[in-house]
Length: 120
Image (spheres, rainbow, N blue to C red):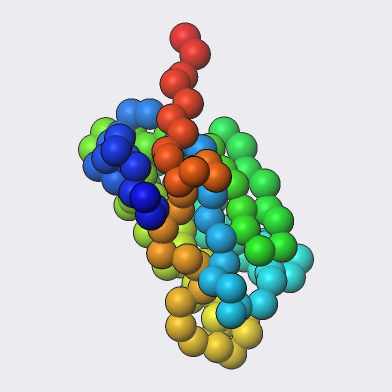
């Protein structure tokens, strides 16, 4: 089914999203310094766009996070802002160019979006 789910998550706000974001296979894994760059970009974009962040975990070739984008902010905009900012900074430190992350961000092994509802 590819990277899109039937939930149309790219235009959905006001929900919790469990995100999975992987490096392109041809790119080398992230170093501890580059993880710090990614964390800094996430914090900056969080302050700029006002989305909630519950948790994240960084692994050598991918990362997971739980985000809540409030309306009208869409999860696709959150991911675009993070991936774009991190790519530019990491490429600058590596003296490289080009795309760093896979273009989609599936949330489960099947490619379906996993939406975590908030608990009141």
